[in-house]
Image (cartoon, rainbow, N blue to C red):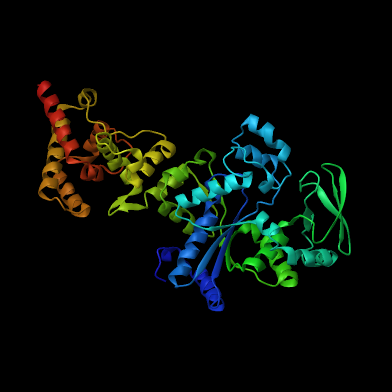
Length: 484
């Protein structure tokens, strides 16, 4: 499998992919994922989509025609909790839009007046987030799918076999109770959450709504509304022929899990198609990290976070993010964390002295600056030694520091392409030859450069630009001379 994501494809997953590929040779392979455009949410749910995108890349590496679908449950009714998150707890917007709770998301106006509907607004925001990660699915809007007639074949099945479906679920899944098989849209108040089907007689359907206290008579052809989610999934699989979909463990309980109930409904009533399970673990995250990861981390770090050991639950914390930042190499022999701690401050200085705008900077620089601010919660600036920091160091130690930095500058100038490993050997030899103590000098040098909690000092001195080291030598020489 010649693919960027090969290292993340375990034997179990590879077997799943190859099994379905062999049986799907006459049509495109479909990878599906799902959202509800009720709000944007934070980064916890990104694991599903990063995993799905990796599956798409792997399948395309086989030379297969792959369609990546993103199903939006835009026919779902909005609830108050979703509204609060969507408008960032803006009390005026909450007061203005709480009357729409219970209404399908697609039928609600955009709170921010920039799209045709509430659903369109958040679909756009969600796709923008995915595009930021180089994830490009095709959006399938559920309300539009119902409205266009794609679900009509299933309506006929459900309205003629309603009791049979209920009995089937009761017998096969005794621990599960489906509140409603179909959620009718009230013709009067356009709400779903408190409307019900009271009776089906031939093609006539009686509906009542507790929201507006009305009753209606309609027909199987004219009724509007949506199926209960597990029925909707089963029908959707047969319409769009999904081959692979990621599922967390919450959906895979054999007694009440959505996947197995939907699979059984599909096999018994709607055509028998269902996707292969791509299992992934749940993601938990410290609240302080919400909305900080996307601006701070390149896509490759999301891959390391979410694809490695994909079935394991994970806790995203500041320590976990820093740990992975120390694993991802942005260039040979330099991790993302090392880059932020060592090189980024000096690159920022170069940008400040140039006409390059923040938008034109190297992408990794922009990520690094956000990481510094949002994750590390500090500003990293290169700091030359001050009279105060040098004054706190005894003369003998300062002279040794001057000798060390002078050696580093000369060594780098005479070995311009030296690899870090080779440099490190000679760096250690320098201390042995000159009988200097690294344990004594390193904390002093770190204090001078304000790098107390940074990467190993040997790496810092290797990567720091020569101009900065020359300036340090000048300041140390002047301080030694003035202190005589």
